[in-house]
Amino acid sequence: MAKLWRDRENMGGDPKAPQEILDEAIVPTMIARNAEREKSKCKAVPLPDIEKGPGHVAWLLVSKFPFNEEQIDAIALMTYVAN
Image (spheres, rainbow, N blue to C red):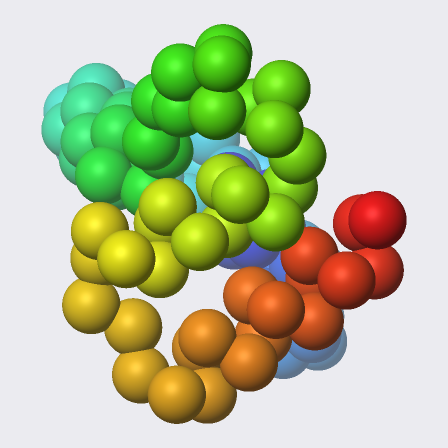
């Protein structure tokens, strides 16, 4: 909803409240869709792996999921900064 508010402000004119823009019938659908998206982004990592440090966890994720070279470089950089 905040994005809708910003979009309205950026377009100029008098911004309406998000409640006036959205139909109440689609709000539950949007909430369910967003929750489903968040589930797919979050992965549980076992505590023993977390205790081994961010480098170990990053390697687990890289080896389990298909990443391209650029994504692996970004993960490596974030892991380096976290240490």
